[in-house]
Amino acid sequence: MISKEEYITLSLELHLFFGRIMKEHSLFLEAGFTPKNTKLSKEAEHYKVSFEKLLLDAVKLSNGRIGESVIDSGEIFTEYTLEAEKKTKYYTGIDINHKITRMEETLDCKTINGIDSKMVNNIKNLNARAIKLLDCLIDFKMGILDGMLCCKLFTVNYPLLIEHIIREGKLYRSYIKELELNKDINKESIRKTELFWDRIMMEHSLFIRGLLDPSEDELISTSNKFANEFSELIQNANNATEITMPSVTSDTLMETIKLRDFKQAGTKGIVDCKIKSIILPLLADHVLREANHYIRLLNECKDI
Image (cartoon, rainbow, N blue to C red; front, side, top):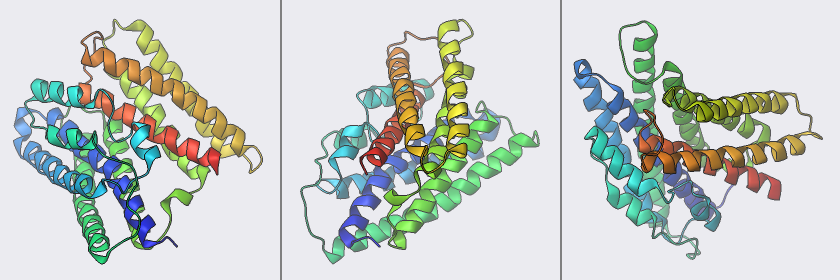
């Protein structure tokens, strides 16, 4: 069981990370549709705007209430996020609320102690809104995937990418539901955490490999090596015993830091127009933030 103060902090930290992830998923879906599918584009825009509003409300409630490790992790924003948003808006014509990123950059870590009933009610309402939105967005994503798999819909996004973002949406929803049951989402089994996020990191590597220009031989080769490394880490986590799991976690942390550094260099290269690819700048920053999030989870597990 968690305290009301922990409930508030964990909920806000969750929304600051995953709320932004969901709004960007919606943007990537919108950008991937063809002119034939304007109805789907409008629906994706609706979810982007809805999660933008949710994220904005979370940011407004978060100052002085979230952990320093979360603010410092680079999972909420990076030094490239604002510029990546501006360039993605320029390339796609899809509106992005830059005000949210600027507000996030000024967030202070936890200084407010104690709780009040109004704040608890605000968080409960935020969580309820998020679950309702996620139910609809997950159904929307699954409908897109079904259309692609039966060849009734074309989008520039890979089917595996749609599966990938469905899994992330379901994870977000499951965490909110656990918080509403007063469960500590930070106490999840490290094996379960690694199996989920290793797969995410592996697929990121595959997406990067497939979205780079064919002339980017070295970057393609590096992406492929990371995909193979995380595939092996998945097997190691599956086969680990209670005794060997800490060693697997240590290896996973080192490999994720290497991948994070690769993503960071890639994000800078894409934002600065130094890398040839069809990767939207915000997608590059998006996968960088997810690596930062995973590194924080692994570090916190090691500190327990």
